[in-house]
Image 1 (cartoon, rainbow, N blue to C red):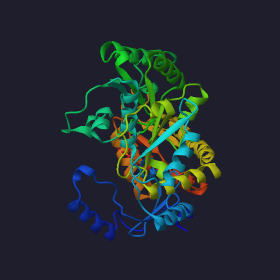
Image 2: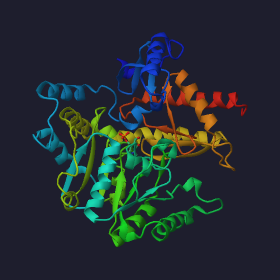
Image 3: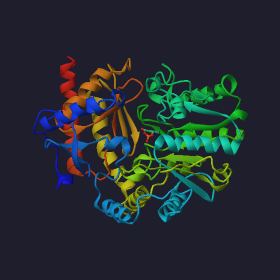
Image 4: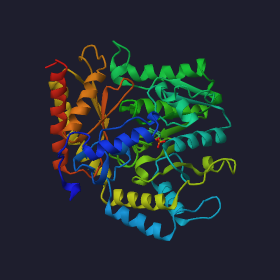
Length: 455
Ligand code: PLP
């Protein structure tokens, strides 16, 4: 079965069939959508993808964190098929469907947000989840502004483009909504030169307090929105000591703390939610926005918070035609059931040990591996010219990615400078596949270093 295979490349990339489809892609689809990898998927199973030319790839990107459950899980296919035979769609604001309610009840039981009684609304994607989280925070607090961070990625709607740090994603798309203020994310590896690590948390909290003086007064701030571990920003994790202090600031000033768990949620970090770690440290968020892996590949997102926050929202201001689609809900219910039953968060911790063992060795052996970081299976490796200067090395990353692909391993970059490689492998990957992937990855690093005359 494909799900147990190892990578095997049989043709040049793309192969002849893939080439002709990719040519049609160029003609039919705007270049603004990006160009993607030189392969066209024919089928996927577990962590493996077969392309239309019969090449087999190990996928360590999983649709950028969509496929924690893996491709084509037979039980998810079963749940989706059963639902499709009954009905595809019911618009919740008109006709109730019970899958939506069941999923909301389930999420209310497991989301680690502040409060005893919780409520959940469903949406179609990550940007919608974040945008609705902000709408809810504004409506509840009656305040107009929000604070976001350097390195943040929150989506491609008008509001979430303005929240996203990298302006490449928002070129010539303005004017944008007002009231979005940016603060420095606690990126410990890139703290100011010469600053001891122990001083970094104080420094980044001071940066946040400066926003209240120079950006928006605290009593005008509805929410502080952050990714517990930044995805697009380079797999940077907010230190728990910093989160605790942000939580305290939010409590003192009546600000909602919003966790964007779109990429880091659903088992990825070794817990169901990254905010579970926050909750353990007594600093849970007020609102969680999630998407991607919740639907197992079908479009779905969710926003959860305490009942009093969710019920403060003016009727008619949230929701939408496809929000909480019945087939997507059936998929999500099965995804969560499997994750809990098979302990995929626990499996993420096991995989993590293997990955970090290899990454840590690489950090010692290669001058260009500047930092390895992350939690659970959200692992990043930052490539630099040398450990002293920490100068980003995106050219090396580009070469590593294309070398790995040619051997059948799909990996992807991240970070403001594109010099981080992210690990977002489906959590159903086998041990043999992890070993094979690590061997290809290290081979790709060595080859790239030779190509750049570094070795
Ligand atoms: N938030 C985070 C942290 C993300 O990583 C993404 C997408 O990569 C989004 C929001 C936007 O999600 P979507 O592309 O589903 O709108």
